[in-house]
Image (cartoon, rainbow, N blue to C red):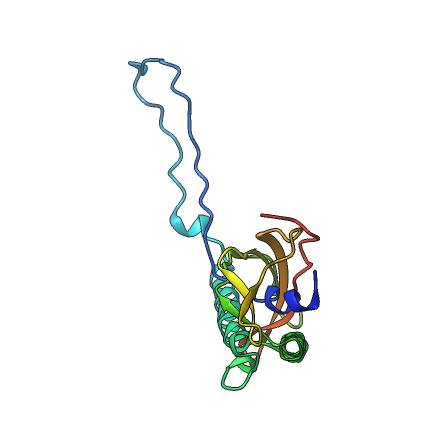
Length: 192
């Protein structure tokens, strides 16, 4: 992947809840005439709720906000007027600023949108600094790198998948989640 394309590929996330369903087979058997056997009561809704659901939602919200601000910066090849500092720490900001510098030097900006399907894959609330790991399925189908001087779209490299997995890390600082690292190669080339 070229430096020119890495600048745009490092953007991040919307939350999509994946629902799985269970199905049974209809083997044509008729219901039994015997009365139903008493069973234990169904578990209450609170018993099946993820105790960390609120924290995971907060992690995703912070990640999405950072991704929106990141795309604002990439569209103008400048972080001025964005709120990146509200959602990203020094290391993550450094990665974004490097991308912006590369974009400026190559005369490119980003157009369109990146699609995201992010989820929290790990959450450690017992650590001294609570930490979360996110996995994001990035979709490049609505994304373009645009050469400002030549006034043309730069096509993605032919080997670049349109959907790939990247990872990010966030930590809870002073009661709010901050993105600390963005790793576009975090999925080790995995497509989604």
